[in-house]
Image (cartoon, rainbow over all chains, first blue to last red; front, side):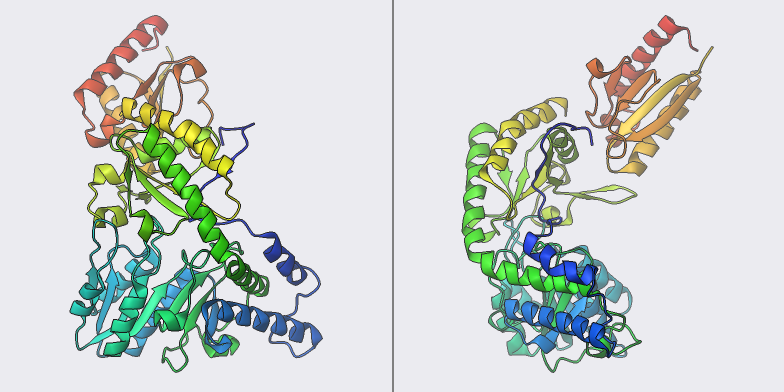
Length: 386
Length: 104
């Protein structure tokens, strides 16, 4: 990709992570000899069923849930859709009110918009300039017909950690179901469904060193939500279809690995983040860090370089073998500045001058040095061209 | 007399690049230039386009020392398709180039 011969440095762990050796080892039997269908009664089937149930226990243990409260999905987008559309189906006749935030992933936002088009009321909570919602805003938004609150735990663009526990307490007090998308949290933060007070929690394997196409939804026992697919009795009749056995095993193993590493990696990546920020602030004039360090996950840094251009920086960094991402998203028809950054009060021009650097377990100090070696010059070049 | 080949090079937002390229084609045709305007996303093809007479970049993908034709930066056209300064440079370059090569 235009940087042949250069050792690449991956700094886009919010987008996806590589499969860890432990996960790969755990998955291999299911990709080779242990290929049974978990619904089969013979020994091949029973072995596959046992592997799936072991993974279910691993995921449950990681988030302090019971195994029967875990439903495997194709990823967090499906889990998010299941919650919102499932609650939408429960109240199909009378409709209702949903509370979410303006900085959610599109898996939630677009589904909320769909509900809105189909007769629901939706409140999109604002965030402050640090990208954090105010739990009091959630409390104030509650109506008699509020059916669900859905808020992400860690924002995927800025890393801001949301006050999920506080909102969970509010939701519980009002008897409202509460969902969190914890995709970006699970690799580095302690996650306990009871501590957070959530009724639903979405997870994705590929964000925590597991395979793509695998995720899970925690559903608190006793919560009424109809099946997402009809067909066979898999996943306690909630999700029909033969299970993605290797993917599920991978998710279970990944959950177990993160459970062991979470504390040390939080500390280590916090150190790397400080190195990056200190280095940049010393070398590049006029840098804006989106989200306060003390309230963001250590694996994400959102940086705005006024007068520059995100895609230009991305392109030039890629030439040096450095893979980061933009703070703004594009779709096929237009350049759309990041809805997250706009919600935080950035102008479209500033949102477009933003990049996201994200770290992972494999990230080393030398990787940060490589970035610091070239980024100041690239920012200067981009500002000059702009 | 061969057609003058302009390559518009852009990034991720393909439709905007196409809008810019279409506009360039239209304006050049209106001014009597027999040009072929094509597009290239640098995220799909990162190599220098071969056999073109002028590269118009929406991103600083290539530098002139990499190729044999003039390279202009035209990002202002994203905000204003008729940005006068950008068009002045494009016309000057095409005129110079065409005089040298007698291609129009």
